[in-house]
Amino acid sequence: MSSEIPEARLLAQIHPERLPKHVAIIMDGNGRWARKRRLPRIAGHRAGMNAVRRVIEACAELRIPYLTLYAFSVENWKRPRREVELLMQLLKEYLKKGVADLDRHNIRLGVIGRIAELPASVRQGLRAAVTKTQSNTGLRLTLALNYGGRAELVDAFRSLMTEHASAAGAAPSLDEEAIRRHLYTSDLPDPDLLIRTSGEMRLSNFLLWQVAYAEIWVTETLWPDFGKKDLLEALLDYQKRERRYGGLG
Ligand code: IPE
Ligand code: IPE
Ligand code: MG
View (cartoon, helix red, strand yellow):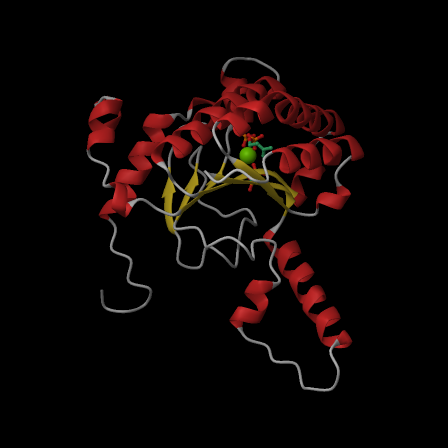
């Protein structure tokens, strides 16, 4: 229904004071987008990069403080080697060509995931882009790469154990705050809005701890077709929700 409403009308309905602080997106459906066009899957990933640029720009314009994009999961290594190689190639291209755009929009880039396991050339591109944008004060963009929610929890518990082993004497205290501090996302607020494209109703191991009270919005739109209008629809739906956090509202 709302897909027939022009973008400007959607934008006019947005309450800036009720925007989510942190939007997280499971970008899904690149392969299906390509298959519908009888193109190789990588053509879908390439088209998906344009959607990435559109959404980053839209979030920056709307002054949403945090955007986190699920780009490659720890499970995605199961895909054919050629697809994984091409995905890494696309990522490198994006980092090389896109960093100037990020910088121009005052966007600060961060990454979460098991980054040490990525190819050296990708790590180098990431390091350069993160360093170049580190003093920017606008949108905080986080790319989840070789990311898994369970892997993150394992890494957090390992890091907690190391900390306790090196602390003298006192019995280790363990509470939610202690765990939160050891997550990859320790310097990010929890997502308020979680978007998944292409109609799949699952988390696929994304931010398991952090989405405890996120509002979830799923669209049938395939990721390469996702644009500012889809984002505005998600934000408008989010603004209508009552977040009770287990209370009575
Ligand atoms: C999302 O699109 C991109 C990644 C997971 C890297 P997919 O490649 O999962 O596309 P579908 O789900 O096969 O359509
Ligand atoms: C989730 O999508 C991972 C990313 C978007 C990077 P997948 O396409 O890998 O998830 P499943 O396999 O459908 O659960
Ligand atoms: Mg998929």
